[in-house]
Length: 200
Image (cartoon, rainbow, N blue to C red):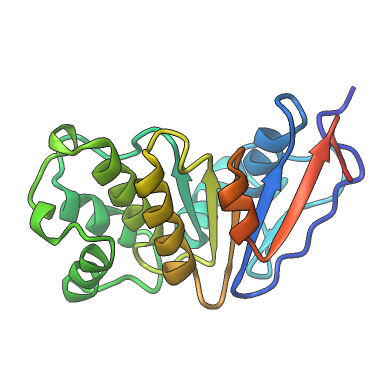
């Protein structure tokens, strides 16, 4: 049986969309399709007017690096780089690459200015989540994909991350996040519910 069936989504600029549903409903599959990590058996995925699906792997990787920021509940930071270095690496893949000044402003926005020179292994759980968010947003992606971004943080950190997601989400792009948190879903502009691979 297909993981997703007859699912079609159009995302509007500036929109934050929450995807909710029980385990096994197809949420992770949807994110993988949107990120260009999997190809749909039917239909296509387009990001910022460019077809992402059914392209050579190197083309998908280039488009993903240029247009998509990915935020997961586990750390995606490169350990041998400090926090600022991780932001600079992420921004280097994007055409709207940020200057060091812009990246420092982003670090200030996520309240990590004093941790710019720190290695990922020295960060707390909340600091790691905020650093991951900054990396996902560095260079101005058109699409931000977040997989349970608040699952591993405390309630106060969840509230802070949600506030930052709303404040820093792509102005001319969209944010899609998978969540089990009612607090996060309630703050979204739109909630998509998946059950057994179908949108309800």
